[in-house]
Image (tube, rainbow, N blue to C red; front, side):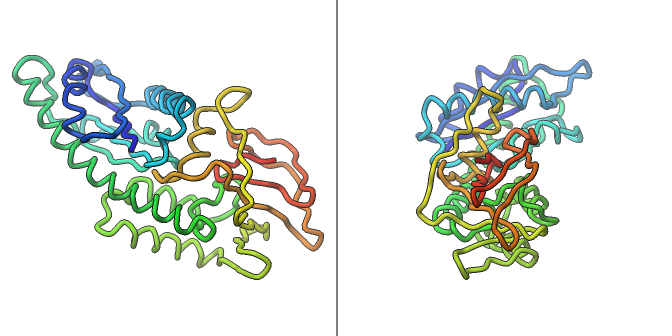
Length: 292
């Protein structure tokens, strides 16, 4: 599994690296970057810092795609009562996240620094356990129900009042849930109250515009989403992961609308740029909003 750790104080970073294998266990990839204290002495990862971690993660997956198969969780460290939502949003919706408060005062030098690092390590170890449980539940949901779960629907192009809200809620709440699989199923049920799964003609979800998102069955063809040529690191990550669970690159929806089935118009793509598309007769729309 991949663990991304945001917010490790710079003066403690070497010690964190030494403890990482003990904290997370064998066989996991840990991606982290040090952070400097603000002028007031507090620590708070911001959007720019989060984007650097996202870029590092995407580069690792480009080099070794198989590392994404066991899923991804994020641990966000910050001084108490600071707003880190901009950083957290960098990892949504592809990962699960847990936010932890740093000890106060956050002493980083000498024996006091060692005690601080030990306290952080214990918190991180506990968070890693809950993240593994949540990611395991999402991997099970995606692998066993990829042609049935609404949680893979594209967020930008599936018009819905509930989909984005449920996924945003799961991003932070799933890891701490007592029964992650039940929490996932409850979210799916709430989404399907507005967008029932229909079987005639092939399993499908309909958004509030009446656009049909038909699951592909075994007809998978890979997304070209990568980094560069307009694509952002998030384009790649959202094509491989959803709420910490791994998704096959070729999974997509065949999208149609109306009596003739042709879906056309202006649609946002995986990095948010709008352009005109026309289906022949359908458009392929991927979970990360890549279109073709």
